Amino acid sequence: AVQYLKDAAPLWSGSVNEAVLDIVFDSTRHVFWLLTQHSVKIFDAGKHTLTTRFTGEAFTCFALADKGRQVIIGTSDGYIAINASTGLQQGQIQKKLPATQITVVKEINGRLWFGTPAGAFMQEAEGSYKYYASRRWLPGDEVVDIAAGTGSEVLILTAQGLAVLHFIPATLYDKAMYYEQQI
Image 1 (tube, rainbow, N blue to C red):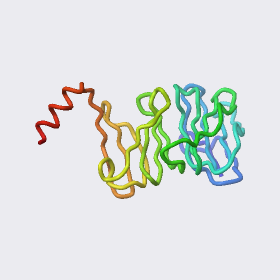
Image 2 (image 1 turned 30 degrees about the vertical axis):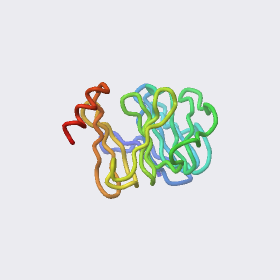
Image 3 (image 1 turned 90 degrees about the vertical axis):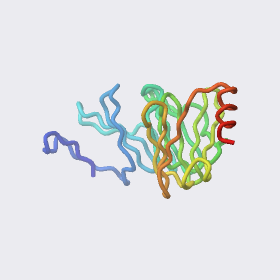
Image 4 (image 1 turned 120 degrees about the horizontal axis):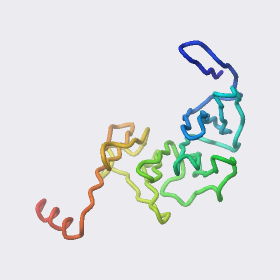
């Protein structure tokens, strides 16, 4: 069951055929996006309508991206991008990834971040990925959530604890001096 409340009073009630995995508010369109394992739905609070926008299989998570122009849907085998305005899929499902079982997807500082049971990765502007896994980067590989920290930090919550990734611009010389001081 899904309810829309205002001041603790229900303004609308409805049902969805399966469990709702996540809800995201879209401030651009003033609608709520709902994710189930097999669909992405939109609830329009002004019109009190719930419509299916996209269907598929094995959806696990989703996020609005590109200033609300895209919906990125994580699945148990890759991710899908759909146009938020039309609901049409943009390209094929992405499977050429460091890990394909997506548990979390977030857009942070204009970059897509993905969490998996085998670590986290960030999509670079040119389409490649930076992969963060093992004890060098994370206290555990099973990623539970990802969030923006202060400034350029990215917080990655794993089943074993929290990692804070700091992104500090540095020249090659700056890096060399840092490691020289460490040694």
